[in-house]
Structures are given as structure tokens and as C-alpha cells.
Length: 441
Image (cartoon, rainbow, N blue to C red; front, side, top):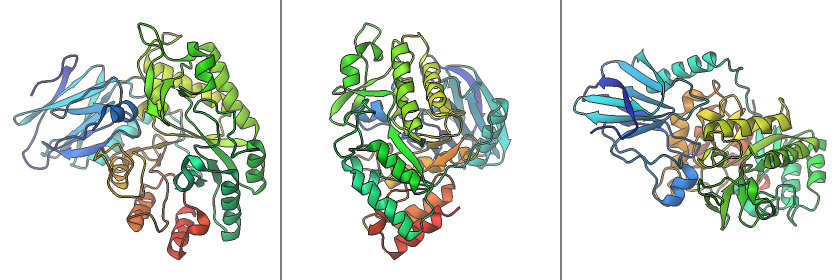
């Protein structure tokens, strides 16, 4: 099997028929990331919608070759792990491909890479060694631990109301739960992109933030800053702020919330000013925890006002957000291009969304499910505490959660962010004890 056009051979590994394996790193949070036994079929998107929302839009790997976004590793079965990574893994979008040819694995890349070989057969240990070296070379500050949090999403979805938050805020006090942050998720705004226009179920959003802080807790909020929904006022009033096709017209970034989604071009001065206003407004209310979601939309190819390449534009967008919220605020990236986010977020989702059921409905390991969430969180465990705090997704331990003991053990094992997302008064004795134990640092 040969490499695809555009990939130059950078390394070749002689492999054994026993014990050899290939590690694929996915582009963004939701993209499958794991180690396959040599010859194992890699995960690929089940539908075009999944590819658009959960994989790198400009990459089209088939299942006949292994494909790593920024980093790929091969355990040769002879006692070494070969890590092939972009020479500048955080500021570029280099792709790496591996083709099995007889007793060799031929590795190619579409940009500059560095190759290191580590003794031993533990792929995660070799990757962690690479990560520590890459962080040191980039001059990264030590990763900050994530605060504990409670989030509205998995209990209330987009139908959350202000009184739901108030109820759980009271439950935290009554149950004496060590929750640092109370985070509002999807549902507090009118449309995707119109973040400062509260929905009817949040008549006093600023007042709710004050109430959370008056309880001695930090306030957090969810946004998808690179998205503008087709129904939004932002998209209607400022079409020039949207990422463009090379031939003109807004570029679709996906479809969700029963509408087309566009990518906001934060290199446009007007869009940049608006987004800075959104984040600085929330920060002025006392919000200092920001879950920014679906942010891979900021790194898709298209015509940008600045002419910047997608990865540069994405990193510039994150830097803009950081400037608006300040250095002490906690930024959690989700649906995020993982390596290009390093140094710009404090914690990052390292997997697909979890779910109340074990397996993904469509069989795609980017889709919400415990199975998909565990797969990629385990694949990216080497990053935890080096690049950022790993977020395995929310702690769900209510009675409706299948395999809740196994899922709680996974969240604990990751050792990164712990974010409860159950209705607290609905927990049984085991669920409450487990929630308290995992939230206690």
C-alpha cells in the first residue's frame, strides 16, 4: 500500500508480526484517537454530517491507511515506539500517514516532522515523553488543574430554566458538595451566535450570575464562539463576518440545532470586536469559567478577511478570547482542534460526548456514547497535566446512566476535569457519595 498524493516519505519502520501497533491522533476533541494492532481497521466517519462536525473537514482519510493529525506513533514489536510529530505541532496542521507494506510501515507527512524512537513497547509512555519535550521546546507554562464544576447540560439539555440552576445551587449548599463552578450550558440564549440575547427562560441572566457568586461559587457559561446559526441576528445583519467560499458566499460549517451553521471569521475587525464584547461583557458580570464548544469551526478552510491560514486564524481567535476574559479565567475547549489549542486553553475535551447509553447509536466512534468517550480519552491520556487538564466529559451517576460505576471509574482514572451534570436532588445514595468523592480534591 502506497501513500496518498501530497505525502512525502519521512520514516520507515520494520515491524514484527507480533506486538506491533499504530497510534492515530484525531484532529479535534470528537475525532477518534486510539492505538490499533497493526492491520486493525481504523475508525472513520459514518456519515458526511459526522465528518463535517466531528473530524477535520479538509482531511479525507480512507480506512486503508493510518492517519494522524499532528502526531502518529508506531510500536514496532521489536522493543521501540517511533513517534512522528509535526516539527511545530501547535502552530501548524501537519498530517501524517502510515501505510503497511509487508513487514514495514512507511510513514509520510505533508509538512515538516520530527521522528523520535523510544525504548519499550508502551505507546502512551512514548507519547508522554514526546509531549513533555514538545511542551518544553514551546516554553509552555505548567498546566493548571481544572476547578470542579456542575453543568446543566446532561440533565436539562437545551430546555434548562433559571429555576433549574437555582434548585441545584441550593442542593449544593444543602448537600455540602465541593463544587467550584456552576456552569450554564446551551439554552440560555435566543439563537446560536446571539449570545447576549437571553432566552425567555433566563429573564435575569446577570442576576443569576450574581446569585451563583453570592453562594461563594464561580460562574461559568457555554458558548460556541465560531458558530453563527442561519436563524441568528448576527448572520442576518453581518454576512460579511462569515467565513467565505473561495468563489464567494458564506461557507457552511455544519448543521445542528435544526439549522445551517456558519463559521464566524474572527479575523474580520467587526467580528473580532463583537466577540471581544461578548466575552468581556460576561467577564464583567463575574463569569470566569468559559466552556467554548464546536471551536473546530474556527479552523476550517475558507477565505478570511486577514488571509490567514486556518490554524493561524484559529489560534488568533483563541488569543482574542483570552484577551477578553483575562489570564486568570479558566477556558475549557470542546470540539477543539487539540494540538493547535495547546497553550491557549486550560482544559480540553479529549473525546466525544459521553451518553446515558454505552454504545453510539450510529456505530461512529465520534458520536455521543460512553464507548466513544472512553476510547479517545484513553488515547489522549498522555496529554493530561502536560498540555492542559484533560476533560473526559461530565460525571453522570444518576440511576438512568448505564454502566454508571464503570463511567465514574473512568472519570476518576483520567484525573483531570470533574464536572457533575446530574440533577443533584435526584441522586440516590451511591450517586451522591460518588459525586462527592470525585469532586473532592
